[in-house]
Amino acid sequence: MRPVAIISFAQAPSKRREAERNEVELLMPVVAEAVERSGIPKREIGFTVSGSCDYVAGQPFSFVSALDAVGAWPPITESHVEMDGAFALYEAWVKIQTGQCDSALVYAFGKSSMGDLPAVLNLQLDPYYLAPLGVDSTSLEALQARMLLERGGASERSLAEIAVRVRRAAKDNPNAQLRGDFEIEKLLAEPYLASPLREHDCPPISDGAAAVVLAAGDLARRVSKRPAWIRGIDHRIEVQALGLRDLARSESTALAAKKAGVPGRRIDVAELHAAYTHHEPILRAALGLGEDVVVNPSGGPLCANPFMATGLVRFGEAAMRVQEGRAKTALAHATSGPCLQQNLVCVLEGD
Image (cartoon, rainbow, N blue to C red; front, side, top):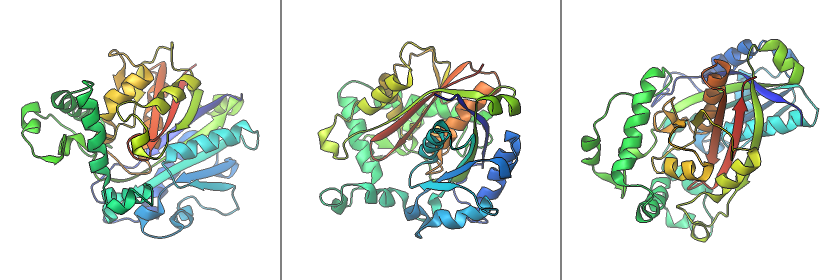
């Protein structure tokens, strides 16, 4: 396979509501920064691909108008996935592997504040049996969390400890939306949103955007002092019907990790798309991560959750630590669908 690396990353600070700018205005500085940091002139980037959701934007083909932030003249080779930008990155990696291009720009955006996100996510459920029930995403995640607790894989206190840890870590992240010191006892005294989940167990509503640039082989080495090489990457999907899978485990993550070469490899840091506190122990077990692995030092999705860009941010944060020499090997994970239905795992290494 061709060696491919992440050579630059940029993101907008996550906010509860980005009232002053639309998606294009939110994206323009992020895309420009990622391209500038890459060292590759925009006209020489061979492929552009984005990730977003029309349901969140409230209009069909919202990605077309977002191209104004990229500048599609002279004509560019472009694609789009109706998923998180991390899955757009996977498409870009495949494109480079085919030899059709040597570099790619990947970007993603989402303004969740414009609607009721938990209700919007109902639309991704089975349209015949589950979606008509009107169940929202928080309630479904509560079912998964309850199953994990009943199996002894976590407790409400241990989940609160995760929330406290990541928000403390996010104090060093200027792009995080929620950060600071929190007291476990006060968190546990809060009412349930959907038992056993409280507010601290759930991700915030965030508006934001992110972009990365990928480059192959000699090009990556020429423009970057320390590229974050993609040593392994794999994407697996589980059955849509929630009743047909064990929600306390993530078999798709475990399989993707195996195919990406995670088992037996020393991982220094992991950026996991753990949008709910109970996701972390499930993903740790599936990935085989020991307690010595630093998880979500950026704060992760519990501190900033720009829907459709959250997974891409995990890749960018992991790559940035490799590029800056703070980690030799990093793991990036992204998910999509209810209760960790689809999972993408990537191993990043420096030279």
